[in-house]
Amino acid sequence: MHTRTTRIAAVAAALALTTTVSGCSLLRGGEDALPAPSRSTSATPTPTPSVTADTDAAGQTEADLLRESASPRPPTAAPTEEPRPAPTMSSIAPGTVVSEGDVASPKGSVHFHFRVVADQDDRFAVQYSGFTSTLPVPVSASFLRVTPAVGDGMSHTGDGDHQLGGATTIPGPTVSVPMAQAGHDPSFLGALVTYSSATTDAAVPVEIGPGKVLAVTPLSWSVPARTTNVHPTDGGAAANATGTVPSTTDSGAPASYVVAPDDLIGDVAARFGLSVQDLVWLNPSLTVFGDQQYLYEGTTMNLDPLRR
Image (cartoon, rainbow, N blue to C red; front, side, top):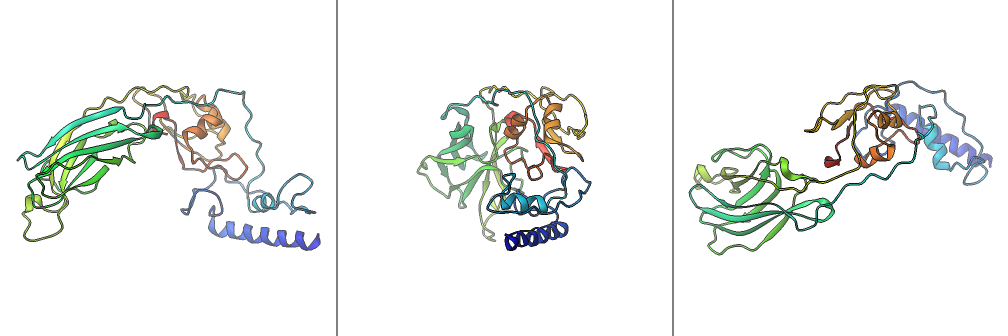
C-alpha cells in the first residue's frame, strides 16, 4: 500500500508541475491551448489520500486523485436546478429542396443545374447536374456568403466547393457534395460562384485564368421554419455570470456569450433562462474545469439553437 501511495503522490506532483508550466494542456479540448479557467485564485494543495485498492474510501479512482492533484481550483458543487424537459429541435425531412436553379455564364460557355437538399441529421448537400462547357480549362463551383463579380479573382473557396469538369458537350451526371459549413441553415449564403480551376499557364487567356469568376448566380432560399423549446433571454449580468453578449438573432434574442472571470456554468445558464442541459446542448464541445463548474475565460458560447 505504501508503494502505491508513493507512486500516485509522485505522479500527482509531476502533473502539478506540468500544469504550472504548460497551463491547461492537460484538460480536454484538443491540441490547442485552452484559455484560462474563469476563476483566477489558487487553492492550497490537498495531500494525496491513502489508497488501498483501485478506489479509496470515498469511491475515487486513481485518475480522480491525479486530476484533483493537478487542479489549482477549490471544489465547486455541481449546479442544482428543477427538472426540465430535454432540449429539442424540429427536423427538416431528408430530400427537402431548399434552393434550386440553372447556371449560365454571361457568354454562354458554361451551363449546369444545382439543387440544395436536406440531408441526414438536418444537414444539407448540393447536387450538381447537366454540366457542359466549351472552355479549355476545368471549371468549379462554390457557395459564398459575400458575392464577388464576374472577372474577379477568387481569394478563397466556400461551401459545397466542387470541380465540375473540363470542356464537354455531353451533360455531366448528378454529383452530390456535402455542405459542411452551412450547418442547420444555409440561407446565409448569398450566391453560387462558378470559377476557373485552370493551372498557371501562359497560354490561358487572363479572363479564364486561375480563380477567375465566370458566373455569379444569386440564391433564393426556402428553408422550412424549425421549432425548438430552447428560448434564451438575457436576464442581465449576475454573480458568476458577468460576461458580454456580442451578438443577437434577428428577433433580438442573445446569440452568443463571452465567458468572464469566475463564471460558473449553472449561473450562466440561469442568466439566460436555460438549464445546464440546454447550455450543453447548444454547445456540444463545452468544457468546464475538470469536475468543477468553472467555464474558460474568453470562450465564446453559442446561444442560438439554429447555429448549434
